[in-house]
Image (tube, rainbow, N blue to C red):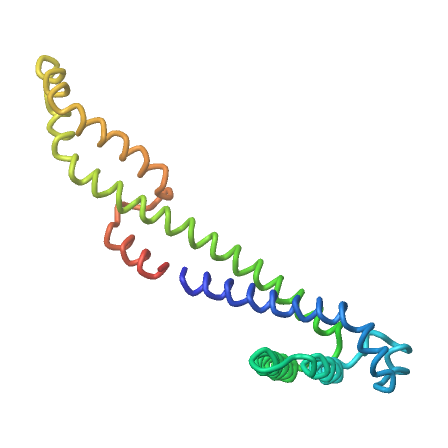
Length: 205
């Protein structure tokens, strides 16, 4: 369960990062083209989907350097460090995943979304299985604790049964309730197996 939750969290963070890149691309492409018209301008116009992201990153980096010139002291140093870290991280990700175009980046995002949905669905299934096995364990503990009283109650004759019930009403009622709930949780051929349920719980964690 923890493994699937961590995977879903990691994928969501990756999608968020990539969407941030897409947003920056759309927001800054126009500015980049105007300031650096000589960088594969013809290629971009002929087929925008083939716009090279590595070139974009370099172009965008140059723009950020220009902006840094207007800053001083800590603000300038901090921005330069942040921009460098962001650039190297983005470049490393693109190379690692063999991504060169915006189209490929968008495809990567869609793939991650699909994986996130699949893992999230799996995590929900595991969560439901965990809830069921925990209920089985809990109900069985109550069932076991109240069973002796209930069996004694069943042995009473018509003259003593009501008095015994009134004296042990809480225990008898609890036994009846958990017995019914266990019956609903168990599959047709499943038996009371607390040891097995505890093993399943460990595997699901």
